[in-house]
Length: 248
Image (cartoon, rainbow, N blue to C red; front, side, top):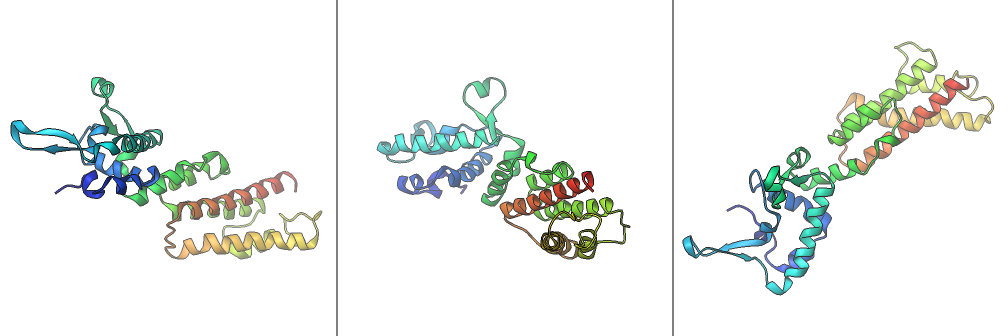
């Protein structure tokens, strides 16, 4: 027996206790199981009887219908606003039928939905241009490990190029040489020695914590917001390198 809204939420109060954010991936899954097109209102209806005596009725107590209609309408609108559903082509769409978008078809679980929304809420414009395209695409696909590795690999490459080091200079030792407080090519001697040392520690620590582990093993990041925070650190470091190139 296929799942329905009624089998998932046997009582109206069970359904009404769901916030739209949590209900959205459930409605998306039910829509996907409806075939090529779906009628949003049908999700709260059930068939009664058989043959010529078949009738379509509201699945829950009728006095709860106004509140349920508002909840379902808000949730369908959330899915439409996120670009996961859209009106069906031609006359079907004008008559209220909907279809899943390409992004909607790709989402098959609550976790997929959470990753998608987190990625959509993270503006690509926040990322440094050197990593924006590749890293943002990885975040959108849920490839969090790849996004973080690519971001900090770009930091390593940028430091190597700015400091005119060879390809054999890598990782934390490279960071410490480039930002050496006594005269590294990327250090700012106008800052206090303590600040210069702190920046060297920041670059070395970031590469050691976020680039090196991804080079040697599968880290398996699962929280998109954690990955976003890490790539934003890489963006900050790239901006520092860029400023040092302009003001040696």
